[in-house]
Image 1 (cartoon, rainbow, N blue to C red):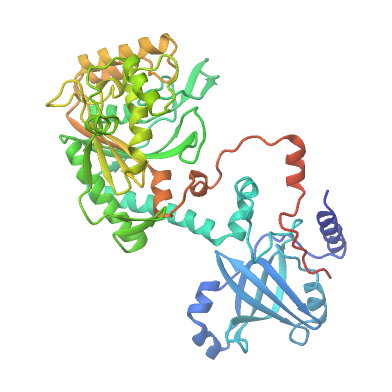
Image 2: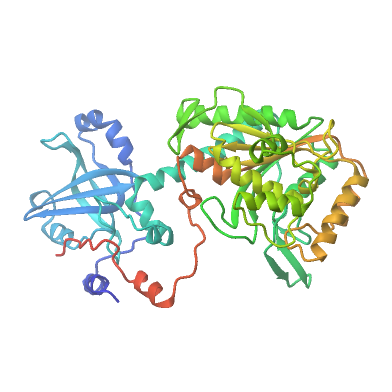
Length: 504
């Protein structure tokens, strides 16, 4: 146990022995910090007593006076304690306040000589005694390892981290409003699935005791939403937690949030229009502008998005046509550009690697990448003008893919053929290939209307609208590697920035 924590533990025990209530059940407030600042003149004139609660984030003692900064709901106000203005024992007890403690206060508003809105405290009480000191208030918490592992400290110390969570909430709300206004309805589908599907991904698995069988955390909710299309729901969406047992990097987290949208009787062109409209609304609602900053670029959502061909762009960059080339031939092209290809990789996936490495990073302005190879798009309808391609697009913003969309395949015979092929590849060792979902195929045999489908990565959208370069920045609690035991023990008892509280 650190010396700091030991001192606070001893202080806690002394206060409890004296009968001081350190963890009461509630504290009645009649105002907020924001309301006090907004209504200061009225409160000052009325001489009304206000009650606030929050966490002490800084403390300065000067003999018979004390100044504290109180934070609540991400707002801060200065508190003024003066011995002559409260009971003597009450003021003496205030000397036992530590940075990080939660307290409740009652008093009257005032301004200091410097014009700072302040609450002159007449009464106060402990609400929760902290045992650890907070990070140093002026510099915030900088160590990314501590920021991500002890996210609660990050939110206390860094307003920018808190703001990203607030913007994330607003983005989800605005997407939901956007879809609701257009007649879409939100329906939840299973997270635990007996058969996973809807994406190329290795799943997380678990054992379902009651059913005595293996279940999977979904890699996608696509096949269940399509069952709803079959059932007669024409405009549906779902915010989904999806799980893919893959690596972590600045753009990927194994647990992530998507919003999937499906509309009957339209194609992928309608999904492009919907995507453009959605991002325009998000830009206006979040930033009050159609131009936003991201990664040193000004992204412009006021114009129609660029539309480029997946295959044509690869041909242009590699300097030759890739049509009809075998996997070995494509692998040799990849080698020329120092792109490593895994063993037994398919030609379609090599093309995807070429695009992701050579073209995507340069697509800064909002762009639709269109018409991908059929081989890597088993759930999309064949392109109406080219049987080797499908009607699919990926929205790219700031060099990052933020989604995927199709003219959805609704031919049950063709869908069976493609999924049987995927299952064959899976049985031959393809961990990311999809298993055969007979229930889904049976549902399709009852008839599915033509439809457009769109999936958008919410985490990546938040990255763009908060100008964040790492997905961990926009997740409240990102997944991290397990620390060695000695490092874990050190972190659990350390004061991150050596900020000692005022002691009494």
